[in-house]
Amino acid sequence: MHYTVMKEESILGLNLHEDGVYVDCTLGYAGDSGEILKRVKKGFLFAFDQDDEAIAWSYNLLKTIGENFLIIKSNFLYMKEELQKRNIQGVDGILFDLGVSSPQLDNDYRGFSYHKDAYLDMRMDKNNPISAMDVINTYDEAHLRDIIFRFGEEKYAKSIARNIVKERQNKKIETTFELVDIIKKSMPYKETLKSHPARKTFQAIRIEVNHELDILEESLRKALSMLNIGGRLVVITFHSLEDKIVKNVFREVTSTPKFVRGLPNISAEYLPDYAVINKKVITPTSKELQENNRSRSAKLRIIERIK
Ligand SMILES: C[S@@+](CC[C@H](N)C(=O)[O-])C[C@H]1O[C@@H](n2cnc3c(N)ncnc32)[C@H](O)[C@@H]1O
Image (cartoon, rainbow, N blue to C red; front, top):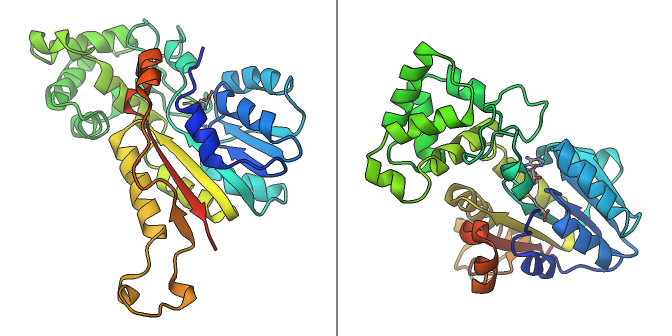
């Protein structure tokens, strides 16, 4: 089952009102959505996901809690357009709990896990035309190296990319275990004894397949533009590059322009529309880390629309 990361902190961060309208951009297994629905008795919840299995499961759960919700199968990049189609111009809180869910990772056939032998798929959305198998078998060596280095922060990216290209000349690389073997051969044996040798490369390929970093900034900006005054945006990231994007966007929209900084009277039009709620990033408690090791890289940031 999915362990919802920093659930209490996210729910508190959203500052829920019983009659508010909220958006969960990453429904997953409804750990957060269920909690929101319980507390928002007279309001409404819109929940987005691009994974059919997560949606089917969560629909059954949410309908035992209330009827005031709608699940929309879409990439959250289109959240604003999807809401506007339904005549929603502003909402009171939006949550992003990024990345993949535990059932996606643990599932025997989705190809996300280096512990399970499966076809190299890794698509959250089955309609996505590019799977991990396409990335591994068609990207050129420099592109593969770049992805593995940047998105995986893998120091053996160069030799992993070289060996992928070498192996695929003999035979198409089709399964997770074939890729794991190539990765193991691409680093000194002692490195394979630390954390799992394929962890970083698999993370990198998954990020590429699902365009996780490409769409984040635009999704955040659209989300910010949908907040009502007093509305909160809560974002949980699991990767340093994701957190950097969130931090930079939040910094930009909460700052006064340089040319007025330090002036005694700043006209209201130059004052920021948003304020950061937690100056210091929130991370899981040691209790949560003991319960769920996958929380270890999680970082939570909260921002509020103030005008
Ligand atoms: C970490 S899980 C969310 C777990 C959820 N908060 C819970 O408690 O069950 C992330 C979910 O977001 C979905 N997701 C990730 N990126 C997405 C995107 N760009 N558009 C729509 N859904 C996305 C994934 O399919 C996955 O189900």
